[in-house]
Length: 303
Ligand SMILES: *[C@@H]1O[C@H](CO)[C@@H](O)[C@H](O)[C@H]1NC(C)=O
Ligand SMILES: *[C@@H]1O[C@H](CO)[C@@H](O)[C@H](O)[C@H]1NC(C)=O
Ligand SMILES: *[C@@H]1O[C@H](CO)[C@@H](O)[C@H](O)[C@H]1NC(C)=O
Image (cartoon, rainbow, N blue to C red; front, top):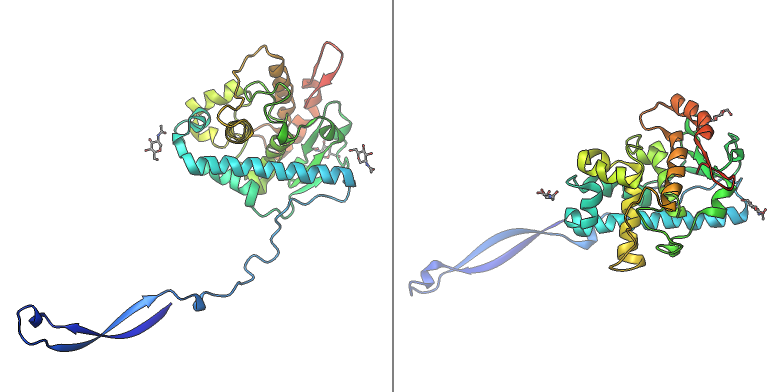
């Protein structure tokens, strides 16, 4: 800011009265923003980590796929945030998933995923806890063993779909699993990291119909419900970006094959029981495989 001293001439009021103009000199001070005084860039954000760290245990192919998928998770989160910033609670999709909750909280969660500091939020491809050997496991949060780490098992690379396939492959938001797309699967995994989800984003409701019910009964939980945040992000991306003005919301049907996928996923999610302490999580984790279910063809599905 610079203070400028200006000398200006003011014609006295006497002029109006027709008297001879009286010259009067007055000093006025005004403040003015001046570019030359904007502080030069400081090192306030030195050491910021802008990309999710990927462990050396990931081979070249796994790293490449993870980088793309994490980028897609950020894209999904960024669009969800942008949709809310533009439309707030006047959006039908906002109303559907968050009802009369304040838009501010979900904006914050999505922004953290996309723009929060990512130091220590590690993704790894080895199998330090042995869980990748369990049938149907696509990955897991390491819980008490390393709260900021996520293991992605080989199955994920074979089964998760890219965002560009949004609304394809028979997917609908209501009947597709939230881990159908690698991007939304990673949103879920990121919310488990304390630095991201703060232990506040949890599993308060899982299936699509339960999430819609949660919006009505408990909007304050809906805005911090992991599955709701995934469903909302998927639905606005489908409607605004992938198939503009149409999307693929679908209608939840408990008997559809998609619902089976969703149920399968819900079983796996037991691993991350909402209100449990970390030690509880570990014990639920070991019990989880027994909650997987067997399909007609003998396949056991957990995630
Ligand atoms: C939408 O937000 C405004 C401003 O906060 C609030 O007054 C209004 O009640 C909200 N409407 C609904 C339907 O939640
Ligand atoms: C943590 O490590 C122990 C011992 O290796 C293992 O039994 C347990 O399943 C791990 N916890 C998780 C959440 O993977
Ligand atoms: C990388 O790991 C995947 C399993 O996720 C494996 O199929 C692939 O052969 C590995 N690639 C290389 C180059 O080792």
